[in-house]
Amino acid sequence: MPKLNYMVQYLAARLDVSFAALSDATRRGVLEELGRGEASITELANRFQMTLTGIKKHVAVLEEAGLVKTEKLGRVRTCRLAAGGLDAEAAWIERYRQRWALRFEALDAVVEDLKRREETDGRE
View 1 (cartoon, rainbow, N blue to C red):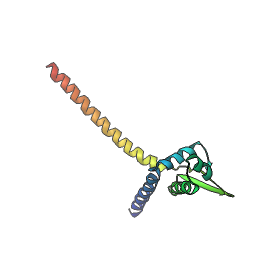
View 2: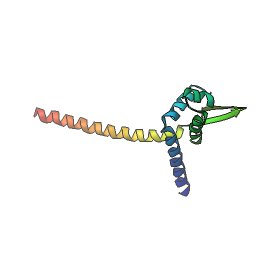
View 3: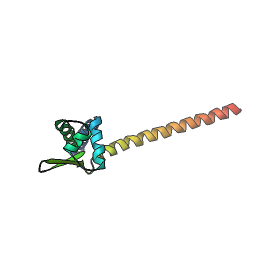
View 4: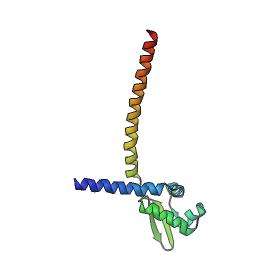
C-alpha cells in the first residue's frame, strides 16, 4: 500500500505543478505557439512582446511542469512541446468528466420521470 500512496502523492504534486503552469495566460499562449512548431526564446519574446528574461521564466515554469522541452544549440535555445506533456492531466480531467456525465444522465432520467408523471397526473 505505501507504493500506491507514493504514486497518488506524486500524481497530485505533478498535477499541482502542471495546473499552476497552465494558470497563466502567457504560458498557455506559449504552449499554443509551440503547438504550431518549435520556436527560440528570442522568437517567443518577440511574439509576446516580452523581455528575454521574462519569457525565459515562463518557459522554465513550463519545462518544470514537463510541458515544454528546450535545447541549446550554440547561443540559441529552442523550445518545443514535450511528448505526452498533458497526458496525466487529460486523464485526470477525463475521470471527472465521466463522473459528471453519469450524474447528468441520472438527473436527466429523474427529470424525464417527473415529466411523465406530470403528464399522467394531468390526464387523469
